[in-house]
Length: 302
Picture (spheres, rainbow, N blue to C red):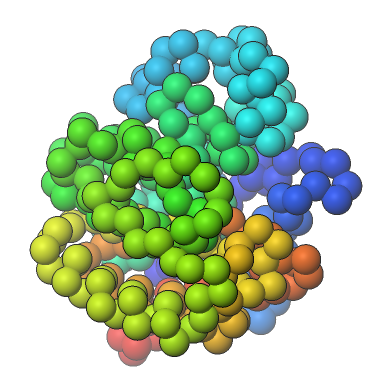
């Protein structure tokens, strides 16, 4: 069964016209349920990170500032959401959900988080709508508990996963691959194990060709027993923050290709960004990822 992490805590109150489309956390599950792609049985409510789990990845100082709501104003502004205890709690549930998705993926081949992909969070600070780094925390928990030996992060968000690259720089058991816009946030990039930078307006054909030239070789070389896939939809041409040129069909073809390649390992999928003017573009592209996971890992077995 396709297990999907969802909780009402994923939603967070933001001002009207905020650039982050918080409404998608309601719209994605509703659409998937209404069309019959999934049922309520597919969802699970995640637990929250413990303090010890947070400290596997984040510094004690950063955690103390979050816990006591003493984060400096400039540091809070870099995150991009109003800093409240609720925001910190939200991050704890989202990150633990990604870890639980990894465990479900080991059982079923794939699992998905309706949220997650908070790849701009560093060990000692957050930025870009990211408080805790869910994929890095989940990776460290798996490794520390002997639940994985080799992890591959496939980050196809239009923005480089600078937090992933920084946190995992000295961890040889985690290979971070990021394919992102060259001339986009973060403007000061970190060094991942593999970075592929794309020109503005890169379209479907070129994007998919680069992916096809890269991913099979990478999976063969890394030989992961766990894959985290950041399936962000800010690669769409309609995205306000993206600068790439993918169509809905191209974004769907990207996801289909990654999921087919990942069948040799277990894959936990997180959503990442999507900022199109029309939220319908964001929701439909995200829903395609869920539809494909259901089809490729479960319906093809019938």
